Length: 255
Ligand SMILES: [Zn+2]
Image (cartoon, rainbow, N blue to C red; front, top):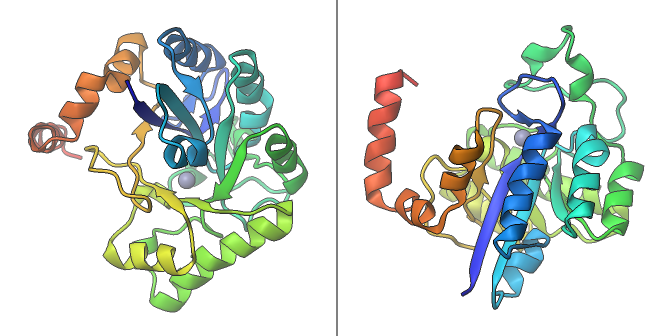
């Protein structure tokens, strides 16, 4: 039966306790579980453009942390999988740690080195190995907060920068923070992206420029991961029932 699963990871580290980081062991266990259940690991474009006859997983990594090349790549390799990386294109030419609201609290602490991003040469190595490199805008803003000119600068501009940096087409986009609205969707279309991915609390119905991913985080234990990727849970999460449950949960937790 055809089944397309799109996962969203960020960093991989043995000891970084950030919510957006998973350990190499957890990543290997999670992807091995999927491999055992017949999932092939393919790029986002392959997963969405060639509707599979069977199960495929697009393993995506936002922000282009260097740890993806160092720790995730060997794991995916062993499992015969390729991934997709979304790079904020202002960063590959810089040497200082990446920073924006959400990760900059780690600057100056013992885990600052985890914020190192990949350069174009490292991204190019992944691309040569069959990975897909897409845009994560230029500077990692919340896109719905930008005016139209700035939106085009971030979306069309990052596409051009990615194509110049790698000498390859850049047809895919991940919205920073998963933040997107109708105006941002129109801007992504103007910038001629083929596919763009979100990171919703509740899985919404998919469209090429609004494709939901399942976010995997530090706190995802073995059973939570299995639950998140199970077809029944994904169906539930895309239903209005989940929005209601999630709304209650968030009110209870105060977030
Ligand atoms: Zn990001």
